[in-house]
Image 1 (spheres, rainbow, N blue to C red):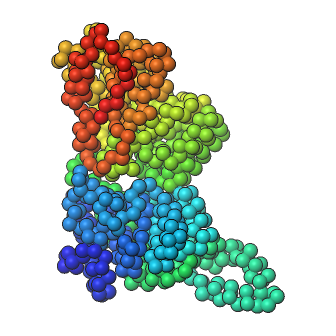
Image 2: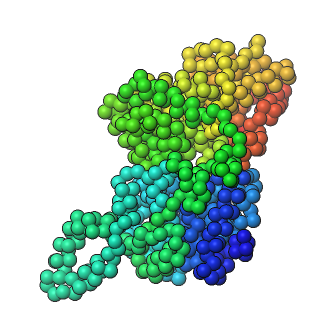
Image 3: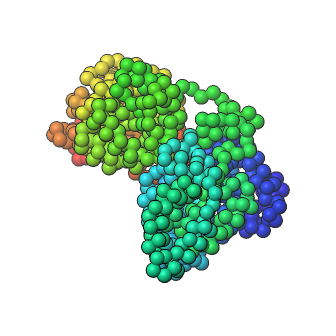
Length: 637
């Protein structure tokens, strides 16, 4: 890899002769396959933006010019070209480089939140700031956004502001007709038509200049034409949609012809107004296994054989698959059950439901807010919608859950995949906020199943709730073996119980086995305990309150942030009942978590059987009967 090895920063990219760039692109693709197949990561998206990334760094002078990547999973090539190729063996590993842009890694990285449709708003704000400081024009603002992210409403709010502001912002639309899977909706059809439409920019510009200079009749004629041009232009050349917003349009451009992309970006850079550069790319470009994967073109892969693209080791049955199978079973007997996905049909397990019930699945694009309110409308119309999302993405629809679903007592079920600490994808992909965020939603009910059997039960119970929104949350990865209950009281499962239990352990969801292990550790220390799995954690079940009131110490172990979570809710409920039993709460701190393996993060936060057992044992030893305890809740690591 003679050219790639010489790249230390973007100046080396700009110095490379144009005729050497195709070979550099080939070397980068080979490098990506080699490195990402060993660590896992977003392979397909990055194979698709090699030439685009090269062109961006040849035309613009990062970091003086700001290149803002929407979502950021397609920024691997950008990382390579900004001097981080040597670090790719540590991609997504603890203390290694992130799978997304990261300010701590490089001044070339700006936005690192990894939630889609935000880059244009960042670009708008940065352009305004630089204009205020007299820098805009000398420094350029570039936002790279995928066609999938353009299905998000926030992107269109930003486009509206960028267009009316008339500040020179370059918007690169990386159009691969996909987000995770094929992009859907009206915008997708519009972009598809643009791929084959002729460029008519010169003709439109000439018409405007001539008519506005024509005395008396010119301006009225232009106004009339402008009023009707949507109908005309969308037939002649559909880029009229963008120009009607006040945005210049360049394209469509072959995203795998570096010279063509470079020329288009150079033109866009020199405009003194906001401009869209429409670049056509192919996800998975140049890697046969990815190109043959129709489902998602290797959007995200685990560790794979670089030659075949096949996983190195077989994954166990996942939470996602367990949910998918059960939803199909429910759908067969409940014709009122429909499903909604926000551009993640396969990742959330709704593809199987879509195959069996194609008229009962709605892919709304990357539009979680719309998904929630549309679900409320479906509920009002007599259906029971199941909205399947990654837990972290529900954050974007909080107001809709609160005001459109809960206020209207809408029977909507939200299924949250990847809930809790997920690990590898870093801060904004950990699903640790939902149980805290949703505690303040009146009427909403939350289930946290511990295994496949309780997942199936929770899902069936949730779709029977028609007078309030419900939530079923579960972890990432393999579903554990079923954990049998000794008994059930109401909705609460008793998983373990010693004679004369002093400690009441409330173990939430995937931490059920951890609770059992802690219980056994306490037994070895001569401390009696019991383990309760509430299954439904909001509202707090009455049986949990009753058993907590009898305990010397209550312990809550939850896979989410402690602040405002289940432990905090239980503490408040106990206080409301005039019960002042001490409560220790184990969960995630109120912090953004760096990427690392889940087990490593759990160990760091003391979420292991050994650490929790030791903490409880020490507390019990220091609070012998008769001692005064003046704190009813203590936050543990």
